[in-house]
Image (tube, rainbow, N blue to C red):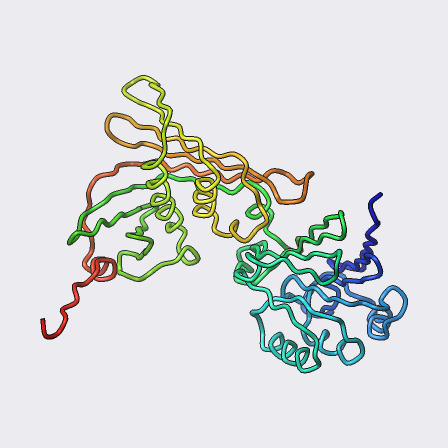
Length: 353
Protein backbone atom coordinates (compact mmCIF):
# COMPACT_ATOMS: atom_id res chain seq x y z
CA UNK A 1 0.00 0.00 0.00
CA UNK A 2 1.38 3.40 -1.00
CA UNK A 3 1.97 5.96 1.71
CA UNK A 4 -0.12 9.09 1.48
CA UNK A 5 1.26 12.50 0.57
CA UNK A 6 -0.74 15.31 2.13
CA UNK A 7 -1.00 18.31 -0.18
CA UNK A 8 -2.70 21.46 1.12
CA UNK A 9 -3.56 24.22 -1.32
CA UNK A 10 -3.09 27.51 0.48
CA UNK A 11 -3.61 30.38 -1.95
CA UNK A 12 -2.69 31.30 -5.54
CA UNK A 13 0.17 28.86 -6.44
CA UNK A 14 1.18 28.08 -2.84
CA UNK A 15 1.09 24.40 -1.84
CA UNK A 16 2.14 22.78 1.44
CA UNK A 17 3.30 19.16 1.16
CA UNK A 18 3.75 16.69 3.99
CA UNK A 19 5.25 13.23 3.68
CA UNK A 20 6.46 11.08 6.58
CA UNK A 21 6.49 14.13 8.83
CA UNK A 22 8.55 16.27 6.46
CA UNK A 23 6.92 19.49 5.26
CA UNK A 24 7.80 21.40 2.08
CA UNK A 25 6.30 24.77 1.16
CA UNK A 26 6.23 25.64 -2.55
CA UNK A 27 5.79 29.27 -3.69
CA UNK A 28 4.21 30.04 -0.34
CA UNK A 29 5.93 33.28 0.72
CA UNK A 30 5.33 36.15 -1.65
CA UNK A 31 4.45 39.82 -1.84
CA UNK A 32 0.92 41.15 -1.56
CA UNK A 33 1.67 44.04 -3.90
CA UNK A 34 2.34 44.32 -7.63
CA UNK A 35 -0.09 41.66 -8.85
CA UNK A 36 -3.81 40.94 -9.08
CA UNK A 37 -3.76 37.42 -7.59
CA UNK A 38 -4.91 36.22 -4.19
CA UNK A 39 -2.64 36.70 -1.20
CA UNK A 40 -1.92 35.03 2.10
CA UNK A 41 -4.20 36.53 4.70
CA UNK A 42 -2.63 38.46 7.54
CA UNK A 43 -3.64 35.61 9.85
CA UNK A 44 -1.92 33.04 7.63
CA UNK A 45 1.25 35.15 7.47
CA UNK A 46 1.35 35.48 11.27
CA UNK A 47 0.79 31.73 11.70
CA UNK A 48 3.51 31.03 9.14
CA UNK A 49 6.04 33.15 11.03
CA UNK A 50 4.98 31.65 14.35
CA UNK A 51 5.08 28.09 13.01
CA UNK A 52 1.56 27.40 14.19
CA UNK A 53 -1.01 24.87 13.03
CA UNK A 54 -0.34 23.43 9.58
CA UNK A 55 2.74 25.70 9.30
CA UNK A 56 4.53 24.02 12.21
CA UNK A 57 7.78 22.31 11.31
CA UNK A 58 8.24 23.46 7.70
CA UNK A 59 11.68 22.18 6.73
CA UNK A 60 12.10 23.12 3.07
CA UNK A 61 11.13 26.19 1.06
CA UNK A 62 10.91 25.81 -2.73
CA UNK A 63 10.42 28.69 -5.16
CA UNK A 64 9.85 28.45 -8.89
CA UNK A 65 10.62 32.02 -10.00
CA UNK A 66 10.97 35.56 -8.73
CA UNK A 67 7.57 37.04 -9.49
CA UNK A 68 5.60 38.87 -6.82
CA UNK A 69 2.77 36.33 -6.78
CA UNK A 70 5.16 33.39 -6.21
CA UNK A 71 8.25 34.53 -4.34
CA UNK A 72 9.29 37.60 -2.38
CA UNK A 73 12.95 37.51 -1.24
CA UNK A 74 12.23 40.35 1.20
CA UNK A 75 9.39 38.44 2.87
CA UNK A 76 11.43 35.24 3.01
CA UNK A 77 14.22 37.21 4.70
CA UNK A 78 11.64 38.38 7.26
CA UNK A 79 10.41 34.81 7.72
CA UNK A 80 13.98 33.66 8.51
CA UNK A 81 13.98 35.96 11.54
CA UNK A 82 11.32 33.66 13.03
CA UNK A 83 11.81 30.23 11.41
CA UNK A 84 14.91 28.51 10.02
CA UNK A 85 14.22 25.81 7.41
CA UNK A 86 16.73 23.10 6.55
CA UNK A 87 17.21 24.45 3.02
CA UNK A 88 15.83 26.88 0.44
CA UNK A 89 15.51 26.03 -3.27
CA UNK A 90 15.41 29.11 -5.51
CA UNK A 91 16.71 30.52 -8.80
CA UNK A 92 20.36 31.50 -8.81
CA UNK A 93 19.86 34.60 -10.96
CA UNK A 94 17.59 37.50 -10.17
CA UNK A 95 17.28 40.79 -8.32
CA UNK A 96 19.52 42.41 -5.72
CA UNK A 97 16.92 41.34 -3.12
CA UNK A 98 17.40 37.72 -4.19
CA UNK A 99 21.16 37.99 -3.78
CA UNK A 100 20.69 39.62 -0.37
CA UNK A 101 18.47 36.73 0.70
CA UNK A 102 21.05 34.20 -0.44
CA UNK A 103 23.72 35.98 1.59
CA UNK A 104 21.50 36.25 4.66
CA UNK A 105 20.45 32.59 4.59
CA UNK A 106 23.98 31.32 4.12
CA UNK A 107 25.15 33.60 6.92
CA UNK A 108 22.59 31.88 9.17
CA UNK A 109 23.86 28.45 8.13
CA UNK A 110 20.79 27.72 5.97
CA UNK A 111 21.84 25.99 2.72
CA UNK A 112 20.57 27.57 -0.50
CA UNK A 113 20.14 25.40 -3.58
CA UNK A 114 20.67 27.95 -6.34
CA UNK A 115 18.99 26.61 -9.43
CA UNK A 116 20.33 27.09 -12.94
CA UNK A 117 20.10 25.08 -16.15
CA UNK A 118 23.42 23.24 -15.91
CA UNK A 119 22.86 22.21 -12.29
CA UNK A 120 19.36 20.94 -13.04
CA UNK A 121 20.54 18.85 -15.99
CA UNK A 122 22.78 16.68 -13.85
CA UNK A 123 21.39 16.78 -10.30
CA UNK A 124 18.59 15.02 -8.46
CA UNK A 125 18.29 16.33 -4.90
CA UNK A 126 17.51 14.00 -2.00
CA UNK A 127 16.76 16.19 1.05
CA UNK A 128 15.32 13.21 2.95
CA UNK A 129 15.75 9.47 2.46
CA UNK A 130 12.41 8.94 0.68
CA UNK A 131 12.09 12.37 -0.96
CA UNK A 132 13.69 13.23 -4.29
CA UNK A 133 13.48 16.63 -5.95
CA UNK A 134 14.26 17.27 -9.57
CA UNK A 135 14.11 20.83 -10.87
CA UNK A 136 14.22 21.78 -14.52
CA UNK A 137 14.36 25.17 -16.16
CA UNK A 138 11.42 26.03 -18.39
CA UNK A 139 10.08 29.02 -20.26
CA UNK A 140 7.63 31.32 -18.47
CA UNK A 141 4.37 31.85 -20.29
CA UNK A 142 4.01 35.09 -22.30
CA UNK A 143 6.94 36.48 -24.29
CA UNK A 144 7.15 39.41 -21.87
CA UNK A 145 8.57 37.05 -19.24
CA UNK A 146 10.75 34.68 -21.28
CA UNK A 147 13.87 36.18 -19.73
CA UNK A 148 12.71 35.37 -16.17
CA UNK A 149 14.50 32.29 -14.76
CA UNK A 150 11.64 29.84 -14.23
CA UNK A 151 11.77 26.31 -12.81
CA UNK A 152 9.37 23.40 -12.45
CA UNK A 153 9.70 20.74 -9.77
CA UNK A 154 9.17 16.99 -10.03
CA UNK A 155 8.93 15.58 -6.50
CA UNK A 156 9.05 11.90 -5.66
CA UNK A 157 7.70 11.08 -2.22
CA UNK A 158 8.17 7.35 -1.86
CA UNK A 159 6.29 5.94 -4.84
CA UNK A 160 4.21 9.08 -5.39
CA UNK A 161 5.22 11.63 -8.02
CA UNK A 162 4.04 15.24 -8.08
CA UNK A 163 4.77 17.81 -10.78
CA UNK A 164 4.62 21.55 -10.00
CA UNK A 165 4.66 23.64 -13.16
CA UNK A 166 4.04 27.17 -11.79
CA UNK A 167 3.76 29.54 -14.79
CA UNK A 168 5.28 27.25 -17.40
CA UNK A 169 4.57 27.95 -21.07
CA UNK A 170 2.59 24.77 -21.76
CA UNK A 171 2.58 25.30 -25.50
CA UNK A 172 6.35 25.07 -25.58
CA UNK A 173 7.33 22.85 -22.70
CA UNK A 174 4.62 20.23 -22.29
CA UNK A 175 2.81 20.11 -25.58
CA UNK A 176 3.69 20.08 -29.26
CA UNK A 177 6.78 22.02 -30.26
CA UNK A 178 7.07 22.98 -33.90
CA UNK A 179 9.28 24.92 -36.26
CA UNK A 180 7.56 25.37 -39.58
CA UNK A 181 8.14 27.63 -42.52
CA UNK A 182 9.52 28.19 -45.97
CA UNK A 183 13.12 29.22 -46.30
CA UNK A 184 15.92 29.61 -48.78
CA UNK A 185 19.11 27.72 -48.28
CA UNK A 186 22.45 28.08 -49.99
CA UNK A 187 26.06 27.04 -49.51
CA UNK A 188 29.29 28.66 -50.65
CA UNK A 189 32.99 27.79 -50.49
CA UNK A 190 35.13 30.62 -49.10
CA UNK A 191 38.88 30.12 -48.71
CA UNK A 192 38.39 26.42 -48.01
CA UNK A 193 35.50 26.90 -45.59
CA UNK A 194 31.93 25.90 -46.36
CA UNK A 195 29.46 28.58 -45.32
CA UNK A 196 25.74 27.89 -45.27
CA UNK A 197 23.00 30.48 -45.36
CA UNK A 198 19.36 30.34 -44.31
CA UNK A 199 17.03 33.12 -45.48
CA UNK A 200 13.47 33.60 -44.25
CA UNK A 201 11.15 36.62 -44.26
CA UNK A 202 13.93 38.94 -45.42
CA UNK A 203 16.36 37.84 -42.67
CA UNK A 204 19.55 35.83 -43.11
CA UNK A 205 21.75 33.69 -40.90
CA UNK A 206 25.16 32.45 -42.04
CA UNK A 207 26.78 29.50 -40.35
CA UNK A 208 29.71 27.11 -40.34
CA UNK A 209 30.92 24.54 -37.81
CA UNK A 210 28.44 25.53 -35.12
CA UNK A 211 29.00 29.31 -35.37
CA UNK A 212 26.29 31.71 -36.57
CA UNK A 213 26.19 35.35 -37.59
CA UNK A 214 23.95 37.81 -39.42
CA UNK A 215 24.75 39.62 -42.67
CA UNK A 216 26.67 42.25 -40.67
CA UNK A 217 28.97 39.66 -39.11
CA UNK A 218 27.36 39.89 -35.66
CA UNK A 219 27.58 36.56 -33.83
CA UNK A 220 24.21 35.03 -32.97
CA UNK A 221 22.90 32.44 -30.55
CA UNK A 222 19.69 30.42 -30.47
CA UNK A 223 18.44 32.78 -27.78
CA UNK A 224 18.64 35.95 -29.86
CA UNK A 225 17.70 34.74 -33.34
CA UNK A 226 15.11 32.12 -34.25
CA UNK A 227 16.78 31.36 -37.60
CA UNK A 228 19.71 29.75 -35.79
CA UNK A 229 17.30 26.88 -35.02
CA UNK A 230 16.99 26.20 -38.74
CA UNK A 231 20.72 26.50 -39.31
CA UNK A 232 21.57 24.22 -36.39
CA UNK A 233 18.99 21.71 -37.55
CA UNK A 234 20.47 21.62 -41.03
CA UNK A 235 23.89 20.75 -39.65
CA UNK A 236 22.41 18.04 -37.41
CA UNK A 237 20.30 16.61 -40.24
CA UNK A 238 23.27 16.61 -42.59
CA UNK A 239 25.23 14.34 -40.23
CA UNK A 240 22.24 12.07 -39.65
CA UNK A 241 21.58 11.72 -43.37
CA UNK A 242 25.22 11.00 -44.18
CA UNK A 243 25.37 8.20 -41.62
CA UNK A 244 21.85 6.73 -41.93
CA UNK A 245 20.14 4.25 -44.21
CA UNK A 246 16.98 5.49 -45.92
CA UNK A 247 13.98 3.73 -47.36
CA UNK A 248 13.17 5.26 -50.74
CA UNK A 249 9.69 5.57 -52.28
CA UNK A 250 9.03 6.79 -55.81
CA UNK A 251 6.06 9.15 -55.47
CA UNK A 252 5.87 9.97 -59.19
CA UNK A 253 6.57 13.08 -61.25
CA UNK A 254 10.32 12.61 -60.82
CA UNK A 255 9.93 12.92 -57.04
CA UNK A 256 11.21 10.55 -54.33
CA UNK A 257 10.54 10.35 -50.60
CA UNK A 258 13.42 9.16 -48.41
CA UNK A 259 12.53 8.02 -44.88
CA UNK A 260 14.93 7.35 -42.01
CA UNK A 261 13.91 6.00 -38.58
CA UNK A 262 15.89 7.77 -35.87
CA UNK A 263 17.67 5.98 -33.05
CA UNK A 264 17.83 7.48 -29.55
CA UNK A 265 20.86 9.67 -30.24
CA UNK A 266 19.34 10.90 -33.51
CA UNK A 267 16.05 11.79 -31.80
CA UNK A 268 17.87 13.76 -29.12
CA UNK A 269 20.02 15.58 -31.68
CA UNK A 270 16.99 16.65 -33.73
CA UNK A 271 14.76 17.52 -30.77
CA UNK A 272 17.41 19.50 -28.91
CA UNK A 273 18.37 21.43 -32.05
CA UNK A 274 14.71 22.28 -32.70
CA UNK A 275 13.84 23.09 -29.09
CA UNK A 276 16.98 23.57 -26.93
CA UNK A 277 14.90 23.97 -23.76
CA UNK A 278 13.94 20.28 -23.95
CA UNK A 279 17.48 19.27 -23.01
CA UNK A 280 16.93 20.30 -19.39
CA UNK A 281 13.50 18.63 -19.07
CA UNK A 282 12.84 15.09 -17.79
CA UNK A 283 11.58 13.94 -21.20
CA UNK A 284 12.12 10.53 -22.83
CA UNK A 285 11.83 10.38 -26.61
CA UNK A 286 10.37 7.09 -27.83
CA UNK A 287 9.89 7.46 -31.60
CA UNK A 288 11.31 9.64 -34.34
CA UNK A 289 11.81 9.84 -38.10
CA UNK A 290 13.20 12.07 -40.84
CA UNK A 291 11.67 12.38 -44.30
CA UNK A 292 13.38 14.07 -47.22
CA UNK A 293 11.44 14.87 -50.39
CA UNK A 294 13.60 15.20 -53.48
CA UNK A 295 12.37 16.45 -56.84
CA UNK A 296 14.79 16.22 -59.74
CA UNK A 297 18.18 16.80 -58.17
CA UNK A 298 17.02 19.17 -55.46
CA UNK A 299 15.82 18.77 -51.90
CA UNK A 300 12.36 20.30 -51.68
CA UNK A 301 11.33 19.49 -48.13
CA UNK A 302 12.69 17.98 -44.93
CA UNK A 303 10.32 17.00 -42.14
CA UNK A 304 11.15 15.49 -38.75
CA UNK A 305 8.99 14.21 -35.93
CA UNK A 306 10.05 13.08 -32.46
CA UNK A 307 7.60 12.05 -29.74
CA UNK A 308 7.82 11.04 -26.10
CA UNK A 309 6.64 12.01 -22.65
CA UNK A 310 7.62 13.36 -19.24
CA UNK A 311 9.56 10.85 -17.14
CA UNK A 312 7.64 9.30 -14.28
CA UNK A 313 4.25 10.68 -15.28
CA UNK A 314 2.27 7.84 -16.81
CA UNK A 315 -0.84 9.94 -17.40
CA UNK A 316 0.94 12.94 -18.92
CA UNK A 317 0.03 13.99 -22.42
CA UNK A 318 2.67 12.93 -24.94
CA UNK A 319 5.04 15.61 -26.16
CA UNK A 320 5.91 16.04 -29.81
CA UNK A 321 8.62 17.97 -31.62
CA UNK A 322 7.85 18.47 -35.30
CA UNK A 323 9.91 20.27 -37.90
CA UNK A 324 9.03 21.02 -41.52
CA UNK A 325 11.46 22.92 -43.72
CA UNK A 326 10.45 23.85 -47.28
CA UNK A 327 13.40 24.67 -49.53
CA UNK A 328 12.88 27.33 -52.17
CA UNK A 329 16.32 26.57 -53.63
CA UNK A 330 19.69 25.31 -52.54
CA UNK A 331 21.95 27.09 -54.91
CA UNK A 332 25.03 29.28 -54.42
CA UNK A 333 25.05 32.85 -53.09
CA UNK A 334 27.36 35.75 -52.34
CA UNK A 335 28.87 35.94 -48.87
CA UNK A 336 29.14 39.47 -47.42
CA UNK A 337 32.62 40.64 -46.44
CA UNK A 338 31.60 41.05 -42.77
CA UNK A 339 30.46 37.41 -42.69
CA UNK A 340 33.76 36.24 -44.16
CA UNK A 341 35.64 38.21 -41.52
CA UNK A 342 33.63 36.58 -38.76
CA UNK A 343 33.34 32.96 -39.93
CA UNK A 344 36.38 32.24 -42.11
CA UNK A 345 39.46 31.25 -40.06
CA UNK A 346 42.31 33.69 -40.47
CA UNK A 347 45.75 32.37 -41.25
CA UNK A 348 48.16 33.13 -38.44
CA UNK A 349 51.68 33.96 -39.45
CA UNK A 350 54.18 32.69 -36.92
CA UNK A 351 57.03 35.09 -36.37
CA UNK A 352 60.49 33.86 -37.30
CA UNK A 353 59.19 31.38 -39.88
